Image (tube, rainbow, N blue to C red; front, side, top):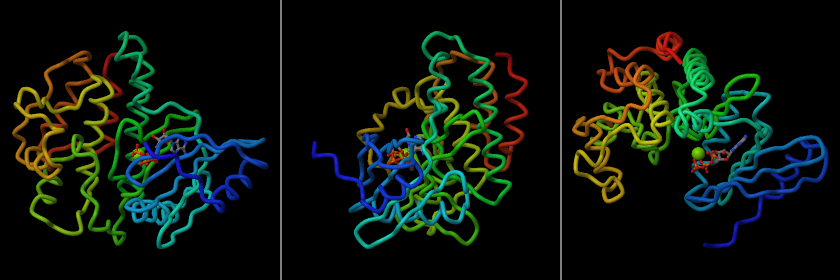
Length: 284
Ligand SMILES: Nc1ncnc2c1ncn2[C@@H]1O[C@H](COP(=O)(O)OP(=O)(O)OP(=O)(O)O)[C@@H](O)[C@H]1O
Ligand SMILES: [Mg+2]
């Protein structure tokens, strides 16, 4: 393990303006050329994310996406250079979707709260799609459930018409990827074009993972170890739908509508809003 890198000075200055004075930095993550700190000052906290090496284009696109998305109470500043890109965002002290489902996974308690979080996430995605955007990298840890609504994190691959992703984009997390998107990546179509329909697949896959604690696809039954495959080999299996869905059903009433989404052909998938309505009628 290398030493945790230090935060870009200018980014720290932005955080200090937001947090009412000098800030204490604590390390959150450091992987694949992307480092995140929590900066805490006298009047609040901010997230600083910097990209170096391979992380430069990824964080640079996040800075552009945040600028275009224009979330004034979220984006505080950013900068893009040749060797370094960074963004500063407001820190949201709130549980992720993964955390909202923890009691469900561990004790089967807390179903009402988890279900309401699932519906809130569907509504947040409905609003995003309504504004012409797709997040493109939905994951259990990429939505935070605050008292004032769901906040989406890690928008490096967020897409709207005319804001095409760069060549390095491979559709987001493969375990949660829609088969048609995996197929288009497999045949080398560029730019990889996300869609609201593909995102509804990832939304259902995210919620499935939060319920079961496992990826939606049953790799052992298909006789594969996903870690032993290259991403493109795994995408090929996702694309041809040859891996069955996991058979664990800790919460069948919630998993059944998610299963329908995960097995549906693209054109028969509900919208995020329709999925929200279906989940609202699930018994907690
Ligand atoms: N604004 C924020 N408010 C609260 N927590 C945040 C914020 N930004 C980032 N985090 C925390 O830091 C983690 C990593 O952030 P992010 O996903 O943006 O970085 P990343 O480098 O892409 O990490 P990963 O590779 O894990 O996806 C998040 O899952 C979340 O726990
Ligand atoms: Mg992330």
